[in-house]
Image (cartoon, rainbow, N blue to C red; front, side):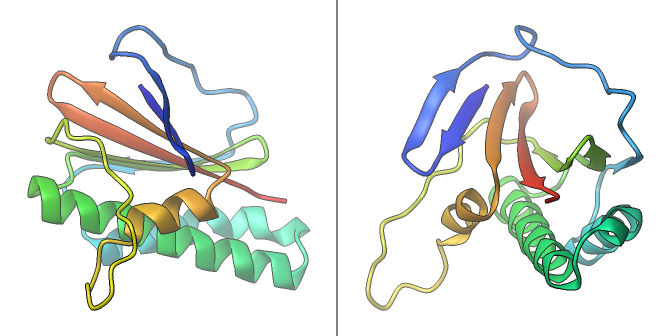
Length: 152
C-alpha cells in the first residue's frame, strides 16, 4: 500500500498485509468493473443522495462537486494509463465517502510539477488536495487507488 499525501508516498505495504472489513456504519455500497467516467459519476451521485441530507446546502454542493471531480480523475487515469478500469467501488462508511478504482497497472500515480504550456498532468495533485486520505494498494494484477472524502 502506498499512502499518498501532498508530500508524496509515506508508506509501502504489499497486498495481503493489510485489510479491513466493512463496518456497521456502512450505509451505501456500489461496486462494479469496466465502468466509464459517466457511469462512475452516476454511481457516486447515487451513493451521495442519502448522505447529503444532514449537511448544509453549501457543504453538500461542495462534497458532490469534489467527489465527482475525484472519481472522474481516477477513472480517467485508469483508462488512459492502464487501458481499463478493473474494479470500481463507491461507498459511505461512517463519516466518509470512499472511492476505489482498480486497474491492471502496478505503476503508482505521480504528481507532476507545473510546467508552462503543458496540458494535463494535474489530476493526481487535484485528487490529493481534495481528499482527506489517498492510498494506493499494489496487488498482483495491478493496483487499487482509494480516495476518501470527509462528509462533514
